[in-house]
Length: 148
Image (cartoon, rainbow, N blue to C red; front, side, top):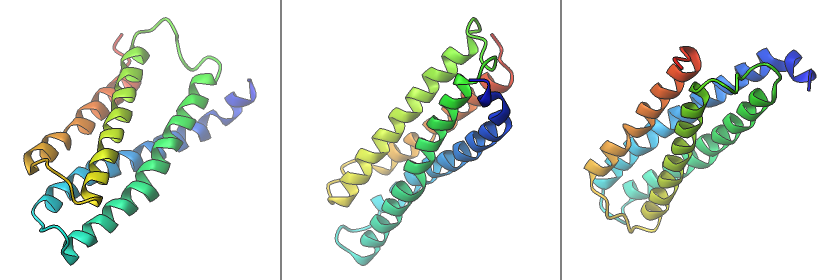
């Protein structure tokens, strides 16, 4: 596993890049849902939102999440990178699992819009839009500051 040490700067860079892409999508998709709520079902505008949401989810959010997880697992496997006795990584991992759960919720909501069966109001999506932000803030503080 010492070969991972040589790749560490590259792996870490790719992890951060993929995380930024994932977060950009996770912050933008609920905003699209907010605007999609105002559109009549079956209209050209509604169909345009469906295309935008599908492309964002399938071409950016999903691949970025997979890349983030893969590069993160490589980082964890790199010898000497994680102090397993420290507590910060437990909270980071919890937040990452919660972020993946939000990803799943967004997937379900996208399918609801796709089938014209969304029942959630704008307010729901406005609140949901804040969850990835809070999780991201905690994750970044855990990784950078490592407070415990």
